[in-house]
Each structure stands twice: as C-alpha cells, then as structure tokens.
Image (tube, rainbow, N blue to C red):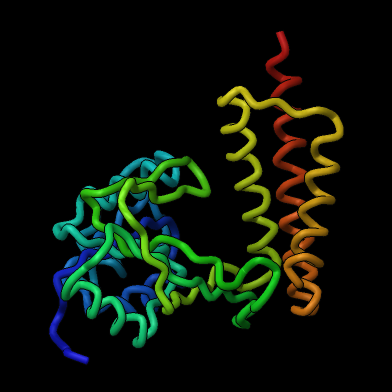
Length: 253
C-alpha cells in the first residue's frame, strides 16, 4: 500500500466521541481531506479532530440526515467515504477503496458492516452482513431521513466484498440508551408524517421484532449478546409505537 494520501474525502458527524474518534481517524489517515461536523461536544472531540488535521465545523444539531448532508457538502472531493465516529476502516478495505477510486464504475458502493458488542463480532441477529452505502459520489445523491438516514441516489450501486468495523455498543447500557433515544425520535417522525398507532401496535410490533431477531435472524446463536440484542430491538419497536400513542393522546383535540 502506498503511504501517500489519496484524493478522497471522509465525512464524520460527532458529539462527545473522544473515546472513539482517535481510532476512527487513525483508520482513515490515507485520506487527504477529513471533514468533522460537531454538534457541540463538551469533551475533547473537537480538539482530537483538529490534532489529526481534520477540517472541523461546529453546528447546531439538525437531525442525522441533514447533519450528514452538511458534512458531505463541505467535502473537497467528489468521492466521499461516509463514516461514524465509532467505525474503523480495515487495511484490506482501504486497498479496495484505493482500487475503486482509480476508475469508479457506479455512483455508490455498499460495504458489509461488522458490528461488535463488548468488543465481540455479532455474526447473527440481523447484524451481518448488514450492507450499507458508505462510498459515494456526492454529486449523485444525498441523505434522507432524520434518523436511520439513508443515502439515496438514482444511479447504480455496487455491493463490495469488503467490510467496515463498527464498535457502537461497549455495553448493554449503550444499547438501552440508543433504544430510548431512537424510539423517541422515530415516534416524533411518525407522528409528524401522519402515522397513527392503535393500543395493540406496541405489543405486536415488539413481539414480532423479538421473534424475527432471535429466531429468524438466528440471534439465539450469539448467546447472551444475541438475547439482549433481540430484547433491545424488540423494546425499540415497542416504545416507538408506545411513544407514538403518547403523542396522539397529548395532541388530541
């Protein structure tokens, strides 16, 4: 591998990511343009980003999709690698990216996501291969959605036999916090879009999600981590609709 930096931008959004950011930035040191859009960190996140030579912008939080679009818009290069602060690019994936950039054939590329809980790769429970668009031509698409945002492009997308490492959950507390935060945001999105729930919606969505993750997606093979994953995903579905019901009651005319 060449030690020279390549003409590729990396777009990252952050808030209080000092425990993750150094490893993330170290894994993309091959890029000659790293953009970090921070939404008001109170730890050393911004300082760390500047130490690594990133171009740092501090902005109010706008939602996941709009915040990531802001980061992409600031990138110097046409081709952008989309990363979260708790993700890492392995050396072999770097080689794949460098090869693609010699002559891109499509408008975006999907990578497999290798998710970790307690530092251990979770091979089931819907976590693998979990293909996601991460390398994009920024002129050919944009993010849509305030949460569970997706890169949307009208052009062709190619699946790659390469992965990105994701260390999103260091413990079960992280999983529960994500459950609570995301279910609140999604419930508000559903309400704003005109979606409504019935009193039974939380129950059958929660049960359905547990059965899907634990049995159909073989979470049972991942031991306690698989069980907790199934329970938290089921809890996310349950509380998403429970909170939607709550919003309906609060806004009832």
